[in-house]
Image (spheres, rainbow, N blue to C red):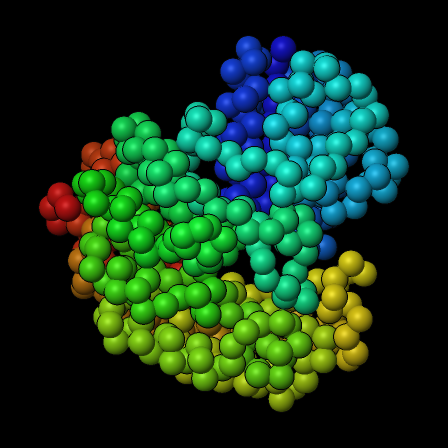
Length: 441
């Protein structure tokens, strides 16, 4: 049996797919990279916002065509899309043979083996599924970087977010289990390990005794040599003095804080269900930059939230000017009837929300370009990721996270993926940098 696995959405979904792929291979089946070669096709979906839902449906329909034109005789859809819409999505997509919710990924080998009948929908509560452990034996295909999921679920109640419904409450892995998986990744030669979760900074708050991200990082970085560590998707209210101090004290940990604040207007933040005010996050970012000079700050902003006025938007634009983030992602509010925010008054017209998003991104591009121009002539260690031309390589600095930020192009005759190199920056663009090696890092 040959199986093609298509993954949509975030890095957390990618890890889930890697776990599923390992289970499929342990069962004796072969993962293929082309859908026309597959007897079984699996789509691990995303449904976080409307565009992700549409992409998932379009992908499912496109791959369903291989049941007519290829060798595929079964199509399985897993993850967030079926979890969000339940049996309604099954009725809308008769092309799909089996639907597995986010709490049923452990049934994937059964589904591939034919032990689950066509037409079946399996939607157990997400919390009922045991967390994947180091014994899952997944093999990340993202060398020289690997994601390491340290927790699942979220205990927050942000009014615009569907994640708690899709993933359940916060469940953290034990430090010992995470260390075991990290040791396997280090032994396999991965040069950067990125810790991820729905809210990474909330790691361990569900455990007795309570654990912390700071303590986890200290234990991981202790014997990791030159390997870089990074954590993504934190929150301002859980980014405490201990975490900042840990990042400051550990050179292996990238001085990079990805803290989605969503908005800066106190009124909008309150309607969003966020537990802080603008003054709180301004103070936090000031503390980070004072204690870790050169630290990179990244955030995510949301425009068009119900009730957002022009005055609220000006506060958000002013906030962008005050902080001058290194990296920013901006999204337009995505409404749906199953969101608490759907019931709020004052929904913003889509055209207005999009225009505000464009304004923020245009100003951030100017800020990023100014920041990057200030790096010309500076030397930074970079991790070589890939060769893209005869003498041109793709790399990242510690202030550039994989997939979400810009990259550093390195001109050199002979480098290797996974190599650390000191690079002197010679050119700067809005999001990317370019330079040449000085000497091995």
